[in-house]
Image (cartoon, rainbow, N blue to C red; front, top):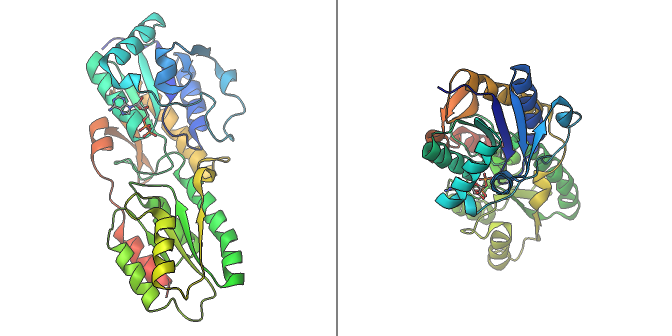
Length: 326
Ligand code: ADP
């Protein structure tokens, strides 16, 4: 395999706390291993537009604690066309970039996989998404921070919910995966979670409401994953208001709050380990894999598996939530 001398790094798709810690780890590990590093701004869009600068250790100083991404992120339709990807390849050739590290979610890694196959170009992916919806890794960069943010928000909403004896539907992100809603519900002591993986959850909610949430409870909180199917927290709240007028129902949509903030220690450590592992992987001639973490060990997950396989929700967690909400 051709020797790798220069790597490019970019962040793409939805931003997630911990992406900066990952950029720092990739940059410093690469420099430590004698490689040159090029920072590519605004994801694939910036790659095509040649928004590329040399990165040195000082470019990534003082960023480990920052949310968002210093490289900015973007969505890029052009990269979904062969012509757009050809332009991206030409730009990388001009900059003598021999390999790419892509930090992003499902979409970004899908783009990476297609590009890598088309041009036989070495790419390593890092799972950067708050949704935790990538197969082959116990956690993605940003998930733990978002979960903690949700927990803190629900704790605050609980104060007002209890004072007014209300039923709150709180909408969280994760239209395809219920990790945030389910674990957020357990962490904040919520009564129920409505997640996309289990369509019968809505019926169970109706049952819960018909039977009346336990009378001694001052407030009830249901975490709802955003969803075009259920209509999210708004849709469910409307149904409950119509069908059970006795309840004082309120809705809170956490929205972009969930993406922001300083990453937790867990996410910083995860991003640092994964960033270092990306360079190890390239040095070990690994190609087209996502770095994952399984039982606290770094693993390499082929792109195809990471993207295409559905990551199952742990059903024991549902049972735990049900038991603890009596
Ligand atoms: P995320 O990575 O957070 O899932 P998106 O789904 O928006 O975010 O994907 C980010 C970018 O990845 C897209 O704007 C596009 O440039 C690229 N991408 C996504 N899917 C494909 C695809 N099928 N082919 C090529 N590029 C893709």
